Image (cartoon, rainbow, N blue to C red; front, side):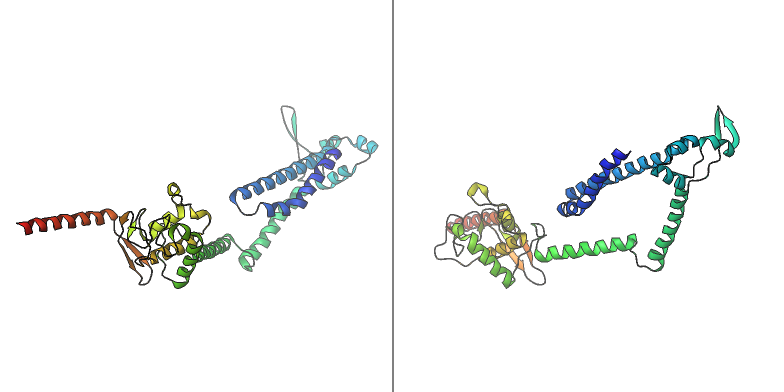
Length: 314
């Protein structure tokens, strides 16, 4: 028993001294939280195991005859056991027999150990303190208060993410017409996009960004997706690894602001015509006309013009 305590106590003390550092290192992710919970579980298991060992050790002197106790003298643990267990020696068990016997097993009227009563009365005292603290004085936080506090923290964090643009994605991105956003978008474009699309958007290696033709679709959503994921087949990297969603929205909005600027040395149009109608009342909203419909309308116009030509020949 002594050797076991000498072995376990330093280990537990070391773990307790380093638990604060361990919690700082594992702070943040779900996986880290699981690791910390496992560490705490192991620590609790060790403490419970030591409590059981101490309990059985303290209970063992009860089954030693009084004569042997006197000869060997009571050890420290035996003295503690005598106080907290109030056990009756074997030779005096006849004094507490209640006369009930079955199959050679006699029933004894042992008193409840004082340590058990201490725990029982302690739970009553704890319940009273808890009721006064949480339900009378209101100084403690009940589960509802903790829930509301956590919800407020989560909402504040969500609003901060919305404000910084961390939650912007292709499904909720909008065209920004704010001057500050467009200026930041211009800076991003000048730093990263001019080698392929030119300083004025007219195109060099990459396509012309100032006309109505788009290879991968126009409008804020399609441009946002193209900038986010890139076009690896044509040498355009995925900018999501270097830019935040807010920055991608800003540079995409700036690119769309170049529509119709007609640079001097712009490249010929590439891709399909994309009609884009923008409303800026209240919130920005984008209405996208399908390119296939535009193409169909163009063919229809050609057919009508050929029909007019035939009619004029007639």
